[in-house]
Image (cartoon, rainbow over all chains, first blue to last red; front, side, top):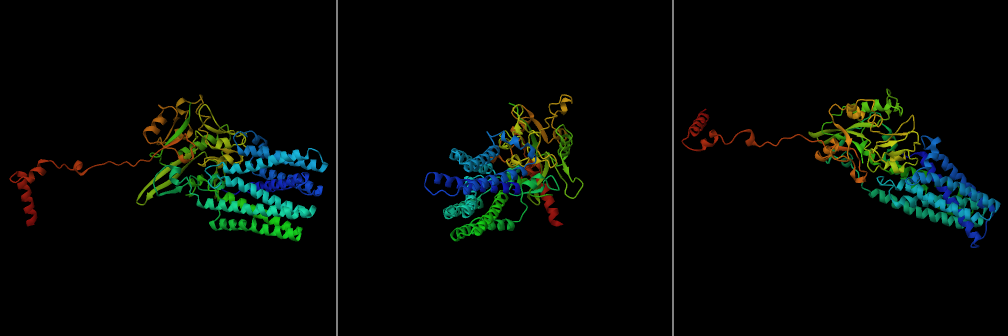
Length: 312
Length: 246
């Protein structure tokens, strides 16, 4: 597939928003149950506000993906069958509920935990929707796996907890280390899952071949013409047009930038209480996740490409 | 229930692209608006097409066959592109099984194109909506044109009659008989999309002829030559002698 920057930004931005919200809400509930100390209100409010901001930026990026953004409201119609439609409903609902939660925190309302719980449910539903949009396309074999969902969840939490660690170092230093442990934990588990995805995808055997595509059982079938000389939507949308070498470079870039480097930076930043290092940790991990998402799209091999191997 | 479809005979398709041009001509002039062409006379011309003819070579030289392969929407009976559409712009008509896009509802998210394994949906670069073969739905029911022409534009244009059109759910239709009796098959059956369009295989015309069907082996000249004293044997002997003496 041709990686679209709109979707790369969209999925990474809402991932940060979701992870950050989960971190803030977890501490809020822990404090309310007297399991942990209560940090300054500024930590909660800023955290929830940042989650809303990232979520809104993601929403903005998603509009960029559409050919007809002015009709985006129509996308809520087919929630019975389409995971994309479900996401279109859940994302604004999640953003709105986190905004309400932020307001409740700021005003110390009694309904704060309830609206937070609603936001948490929507947050988890959003992870499922985002993952299923890709995992439900069965003939995109690289995506059609539960690992896709788990990967979205873990990477969202890893980057969100990473940002929460930075926030804690600025506003609630007592929580820097516990949050850092969670951020490193999510990052480590996410690396395992991503490695499992890479291993699985490397072993995949395409179910469709040129023989099944045109229905001619002969081991030697070669395309000579694809019906157009200057390319088409089919050659632009479904092919990344990069070399194998480039793809491999991106893979190693994200394997380094999204996992070990930010994990090390988070650990160093938390133990030395250096907010600047924690800031770097988040920026590096986010850059790594952009590469990860680029690779996620580029690696998916659409069966329609079988019909578009040769221009003339 | 009716399921209109095309059956394409690869055995007679000559790859002339008449179906491509007539499709483009009809559908770019219709009520649904033009099919965008970008840079048509430039270096990299591109545009929106419902139908394309591709060419494949099967086998290794000199034992090769050229296969011209027209490809358009297959109007799947279980179309994977329809349930994924978030707006309901993509739909399959109950009355005749045609898969259509409502251009007024489409938001151009391209998700349906991702969900189609055949690559037959194309985003129109100008209108930014998804377009695909309509089976000339604005033509096949038009009572203002002569009944013989109420067929998809590609079907009427084909000079070799490689494109058959009809209801594949009607067992007596021309298309059903062709699929049944001439080895009609569907593309990428592994995904369970049940395409309504079928293809008839390319067949090499061969004729099994044995040697004894070309030259008779049981004439008197051949059988009697083996019996000494017969005229045929004497002639054979004389011919052999003449051959040896020369």
